[in-house]
Length: 288
Length: 248
Image (tube, helix red, strand yellow):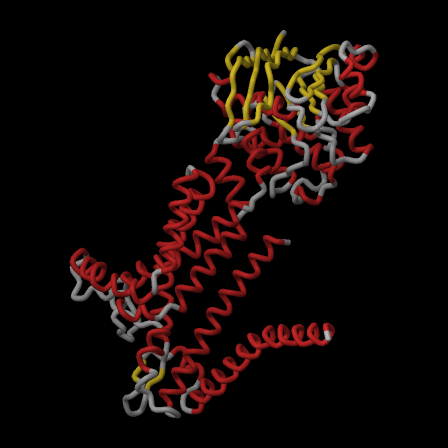
């Protein structure tokens, strides 16, 4: 009887374990099947590098280059804002902050991570967008820059908590070794702790960026959604994610437009896959 | 000449009274061995001398501790640690190449001239008896070295910043007998130019290299005398018991 129970439990756990892989494979297959159908009507080259996205004109123009640029621009902006602040914050929490401030900061960061993206988008819409409009004297404040700033807030918790972890797990002896040579606190942080934690910090950054590139709701609300190749960071852009979210509801099932949205899904999937793999490589480098 | 003068030193880590009224004078160019069982306060004593205990947030001290007749708390902490180098129990190379490990401290203290740096690195590695084993692969990561070589690399790193005193914290506890012999040989040679304080769990090592030996027990300095005296006719029977291996 006991053996039988063992057997059942073991198999149940096995099924649970396999389920996650099974679903990923299923999703991927579905995505590929639907997405690849678009290439019956447009070549992969024209799809990826076409400069205009007019999915419901006659004939439909399905070039996603403006969307790719939109996603990359917003992501790049968010990275430029969030990486220095996030890493510096992690250094402060891990090394400098007194215990009480450290606890308060960590709680604050967790709270930031807990804000739903739609709320962030909403707050951005009513505060940041008008502000950007008036500061830069723009016709509209719905720009790539607004998106970058809000997304930076979303990437920050990931970057801070993982980078802080990486800094914290640097052996204490490294620090003592550097101090014993007469290094100042900053020299120790800059020359010993940061290099020793570098792989973990890179992984933190990659995961933060991964979160940004897949984010939909907030960017849809505040980037203006104009599918043109952006000439600066102060114009409206449309990202890959926002395109899918905005258009999926109105696309006719089985139409070119419908398949094209799935193909965008594949592009996104590949992008975040690459980012995650890179992060993973760095994380494992650290553990080796 | 007296290097360190310790008078009525008491230290606490939170509630724990780690050193109790310790009085010691460390002479220049001697090797002072410090022995005692674990938790006897010998490492805490050593870490007082370069103020590494200050890293603990709940650390407190009373009494006086002078380095070259100057209150240790009035000396700028970075320059104190430059003058009083330390070699740790476990070899801790930094995640850098062999060359960079040695040049790290030199650069940190503001020497920029490349030839000068190479010169210092070579001299330090020679002093630590490591040069011949590594001279062909200075750019290799320090983790490729054996444990004994890593420890001598750490000695070279400490020597490179030209300290006056070197503190050894159980430097051979992780090493095989041959590497231990090499480290001890290096210490005996270094005595000419440096003052050495050696904390060791290995009583025989204290007997081999120490000019004088201090015996700590439960945070108290039980006895301090010439090494031969301690190992042949100690005054205190607790010292006698420890060096004969009756406890500890």
